[in-house]
Image 1 (cartoon, one colour):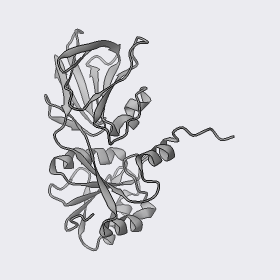
Image 2 (tube, rainbow, N blue to C red):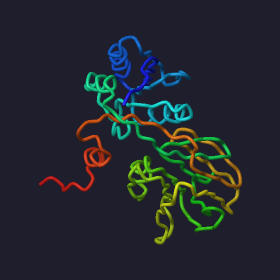
Image 3 (cartoon, rainbow, N blue to C red):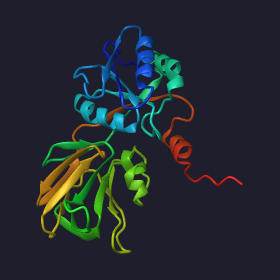
Length: 268
């Protein structure tokens, strides 16, 4: 596979130690085709984006560049690094594989809130405006009422986000190749409230009878908005495009096992 590498944006998060040094190293390896940008000053027209930071940095870039169909690759300088797949000592390997076309690009579905036009790669979290107490949240799928949750909130997650907040709240892990969403209640006050997986073409609406009828909806844990009366969430018409290197141990299941220690027996 080949990628246009005439205009490469190397975007770094200055709040994470060491990102500037790594970003400068990456720029040098691309032989003058790359320029450095702060995460708060992202360009509008690169051909390809290299992200230096944590998963949060990559999520912010994905929300911007999905609309432009621009692929992303992440170097992990944070903690888990589930989306940002390479480490700083792999710069030479990464650049060589990208230059030689030894990679693939995965399309990842995203969420959209039509009311605010906010989008998310991982998840959207809905809470009542009064954070100090639980809320009664009515969930509708395609206009049909499914259930009422008495809970601290709801997580609506993509398969990409199923290994993030949704997982810690008791949701399932979903392969990113499946186009679906999962709705996970946060600390529900009933034993029969369970996560539900729905097709990605379903239309989700959440309402409440609580007063005030205000919600906070947060996209990827970063973009928070207040909405009155009801919240609607649906599949975004654009995909995030993640560049993945062709190398051993780079499949979703490999990453799941290595980074989350999934299904591994404890050490004796």
